[in-house]
Length: 290
Image (cartoon, rainbow, N blue to C red; front, side):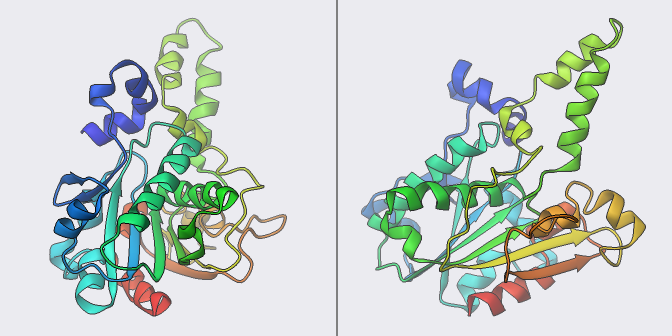
């Protein structure tokens, strides 16, 4: 509930009721982990040099990655840790603040994490669900300007249902606010909708076009559709219920694709939240990460 409220009005909580605002943090077993060597060593006793960083989406938290883990044999992080050389690191963020503010905060956190990590970091994989993908892309852009060490270590960037071209629901809500404001009888309902966080507003159009991809990293774009194909009428209308296929893959119907040469995985017959823990996605992660 706290994560949902932070997604809705987290920017206002940060300013007016900070005790209810979620601080950005590394999370292990439901607890924040301080970013110093001693605490990281205790939290990650089997830390390797390959670090997979997971960031959730709007109104979610680190525990959302455990969706259906009893059916799948564990979360993505559980299985990567058990079957590969990758050490999973889960973040929790206040998704109600702006994507830009979260990107700056994540860039700083990863800088600290790499510096204090118990072993020398060789590779970093970034995995973001929905809004989390936008924040991680933004963090790479922020960090690239300052040229900290961690950006040069990023080998893979995975976005799961991320609205690179914007989310239709966010656009619909914006149009609804304007429409409701036209009449005195409905204006109060419009004001309620208008009291949504800047994080939600940021989903209308995705990141600015000048946010570039890391030239040395491999990008992997995962898109779900409710229909069996992206061209299915249900898929074209609703996408995965929140994000349409062209937006999740950064491929507008007109114009240049955002991630030329990127890997694209289509998950048919699945919804937006199914991407948090899906057998097909995990199989792809194993292949992509090597």
